[in-house]
Length: 170
Image (cartoon, rainbow, N blue to C red; front, side, top):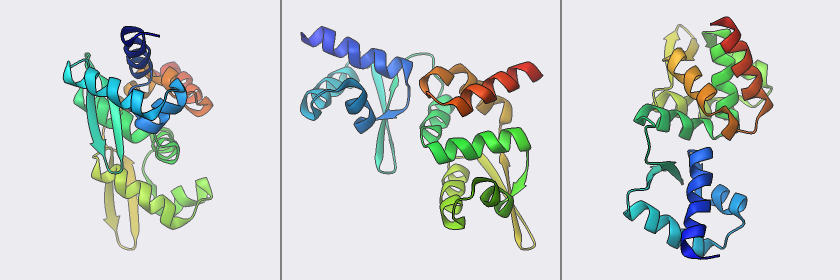
């Protein structure tokens, strides 16, 4: 395979799955790390892709009409637990930390970690009332639209079910 074909494969994977991190790209493309790194660098230098650093992950996006907000949302939703929390809050509305923890049967610290990250990225809002912390999706229409628009990139039945229900309501 020549360089142009290799870059096309990488670019197509990024277009169909915006926000993937390096190791996930490497797994999906079954490509050696060095080769993938080299071609990603070339695509970035030529302005074909956009690279965003998010904590310990470097995420890749096509340099297309995708908005900054969509990139932020997609980066956050690439994590399965965060995606499940956001979809739960889109469907159920404002919930307490305890209600979220009970719904997912995950440890409170795991839920807290993901909620804090989602609040920091301005995807969720948080309100403290007495001893309770309440959470809800900051811009539900925009987040829902982004999930629906890029649902094929998730390979997730939860996303498909959400997209179907959300579009039926509108």
